[in-house]
Image 1: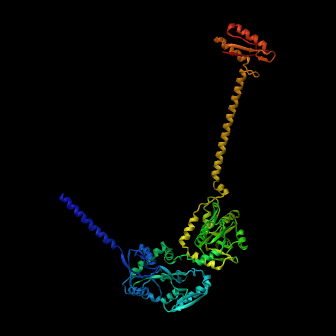
Image 2 (image 1 turned 135 degrees about the vertical axis):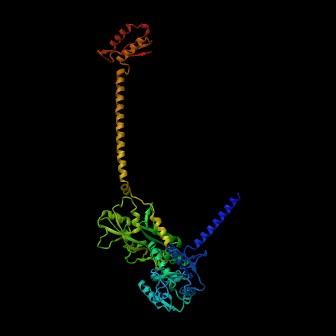
Image 3 (image 1 turned 60 degrees about the vertical axis):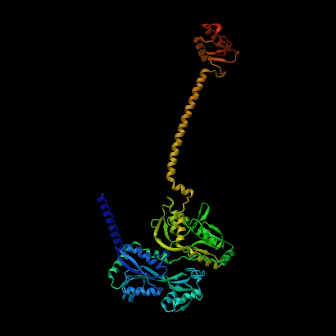
Length: 608
């Protein structure tokens, strides 16, 4: 027993030692790479749980799967400028191994090592206060006269902004300041409406309304650390190959903040003053606008309904079923808004129609049925009435058109109906959906619609799109018959066979029944007189003979109505009174008179 206890304790000691060894090995499985961590909103920061977060952290998390690194983030004190200056000095001295969001030029390349690939893109942005309702993202028509604060020492940035304004056709006034702090104060105090800065250094109480001048940024490595540079190049090459959209996804996650939709009571009063607006919607354009169970539904319908629920807008849907009807309603000024207008549709160039900023970006593809479906010499028409367009293609093999990718995908889910449609999914062109506003609606309402469009997150839009894209498909009666044609044919053949078998069965039953009736009729005629219904002579004699042989006591009754009828027996026609004589002779042959009584013939029956 003592030896068992010793062996057990020895086993525990070995287990503990092995556990400690494994723990130490786990802690030192990779090379420790020290990365500078300046506190920058969106790029690198500490979240509410106290964890490292931001674009830099998420990117490195994906990158280290291609290395054996253990990342150690290094923080320093001071404001952002001080942190960046301190960390840059530490990188140059080799105290840290890497520093992110670095520019790359000939001067810096003489000091630091740079990989072959950038890991992100920064934009110069136009930023306004978050709670400012007057400036909408990329609503260039509403930016005329905007007062912009800029840093006086960066003439290149001012030139880039001037080009951005010229391209997007808005006017501005520049207010130059000597420091970033002065620019912030100018906007916060109302001396300026917006300021020019970098998106990766955006202050918390600001939001972005415009982006321009994209520029890549890089990791910079300590001088002479060529082994780490080689590992970084290999890892970035592998990451770019496996996740080519990673940088775009991370940028959208960390820098494209969706604004909240802010509406003052004054704006609500203004919207109420507009009364009930007539809003035009199409049909046959799922998943954006279509009829389902007799109700108008779809992405664009829900988008406007959400706006109405928030603002109190009163509107009346006007439903059009064809392009001709749409154009007629718009040209005759019978609608105030067009709920869903594609920027490349026939409505886009119409005079008197203004458009909001896009509320959804999509792309179109080509569709047709001819043998060479995509070799068209002229530009194809874009059709928003997708369902009608597909029917046109089926009736005209030379016809081709462009349609929304998601709309085509929705209708092509119909089995069999559109099997002849050929779609070139690679022939893609981008376009957007907006709300069309006629001249009967003031410009101020367009600004409110623009603010609402900018407030809806991409996630919310995608959620609505996928919800309606997955909606069940309705088939017309003819389409249902087309889809189930083989089943209907088989069912019809089976039904014909069953009906034929049933008819043959009923006919055989009818024949058997008629034969039985005939047999019964013959039996009846063989026993009864056709006129009187009494036993005929033959059957009467048979019964009488049976009675005599059995010596049964019977009563014989005969009615003789002279000349009433003739009896047809085997010897010819007899009168009824002659038949009585024959019966009497039968009785005299062996039957006593007290055993029967007889009445006058020819109607006779026996009573036992």
